[in-house]
Amino acid sequence: MSFTDAIINHDSDVINIAGVPGAGKTTEVINLAHRQSSKTFLYLSFGKENTANARRRMPNNVCCMSFHSFAYKQMGVSKARVVSHLGFSHYKSSLNSIGLSIQSPALLECISLLNELFCMSGVPLNQASTLLSNPSFPNLNKKDLSVALNAFIRLWNACWEDGSTLPITHDMYFKAYALSCKPIEYDYLVIDECQDLNSAMFELCLRLNTISPNLIMVRLGDPCQQLFGFRGSSEQFAMFGFDLTLSKTHRFGKTLCNLTNDFMSYQTVPHYTKIQSNSDHTKVSNYIGFNAILSHIENGRKQTVIAKYNISLWHMLKELALKGVKCSILGGVNKNEFNFLKQLYHVYCTGDKGAHGRLKGMTFERLKMKASINRDQEMLLSCKFIESIHDVGAQAFNVIENQLTDMKDADVMLTTVHQAKGLEFKHLVMMDDFDCARSGSHFLRLPKEEAYLIYTAMTRAKESISLPKSWGDVV
Image (cartoon, rainbow, N blue to C red; front, side, top):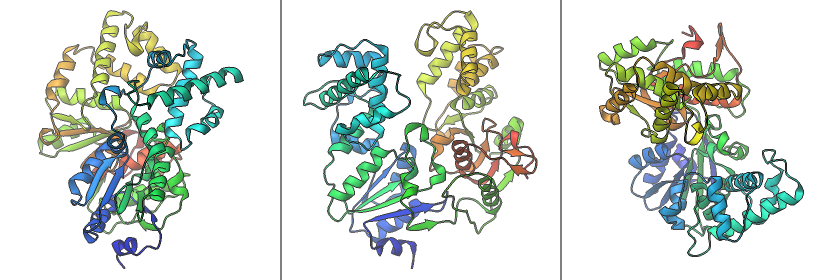
């Protein structure tokens, strides 16, 4: 029986499928959609890039959307209301508009945390009080916690009254939809990247499956590619158990397959599926260095550089831009991040204190010291980046902007692991900002989150991969 037949003939309306990187999970959905051409499919995925990739490949009977874009469409929210983040000023203003005057920073922080946790949770509004046990809440007495809880509930309800213009986040309208969704007119609901769904997303899927007549739900994922724990991703997918498993990769060959299995054998992570491969088409090399990257470019080989941190990409981008290499950043340039680096450079050069955002009232040295105390690796790398362009000066930012182009014209694609989820690249170079994962002839045991990052990064490669410098001579 083929894999597609196994799905079609499955005796449950919920099917859980685990698949290793490159196993063809998307291809199996495409095959299923073709076989069931008279049926309609709704494909939902956690990430924008993964959704866009699926949309390009799926047949016409499949509607592909991200979770948030689907909720946005269903809720009919005004775009003017949506903000990326609610600050204390937003909360003060919104609370004032419903007759509540709350000035205490501790109470405002509590309301903000309640909102964030509620939006990621699977609990209904009448159980929001259970979220107060979270250890991240400020140390408030019971009376203040009660004030914050009641204010949050009133604010939440006010946000969804007819004609409301109160600002909301993407997670807020998603949670509102999860609480109020109605049956959907599809035969299949396909959920991809299930390992990264938060509890609110799981709750939505289960509710849709329960209230929609004859809906079959197919859940796909790989527990070891869970990268969004910091955004509340849930362990529920692995806890359900798997009805079907895809263990053979079609993306990379035996050498990388064996190396990945070796790395994961040293990690104490549950639910790992040992990867198999029938081919030997992937070249694995030790760290190749910047000059080797340039040499490959001169020989016509387009490459992808993958990093743990965003700022590491700016380091590489600067070096490549100064050499006249055309580059592209997956997902586009983060304008806020670019402007922050410009402001940071100004503070560095002038010795002045910053005037806006994270730099407000901070000198460069003070910011650097604070980042060191807090072990803020991303900020430390930002400071190091600024120090590295001292000889070039502000001109470096102009050079970077001039060398940025779209994907088809770029010689080098730059991406973080998080942006690269669900994607694959012919020639991959891993930057050296990942944790050192090797000592001598064997791998080291790493924290689960770092192990998942490295595992996901390694398994994006198709034809060749260069490993981080700190790993030494692996091959």
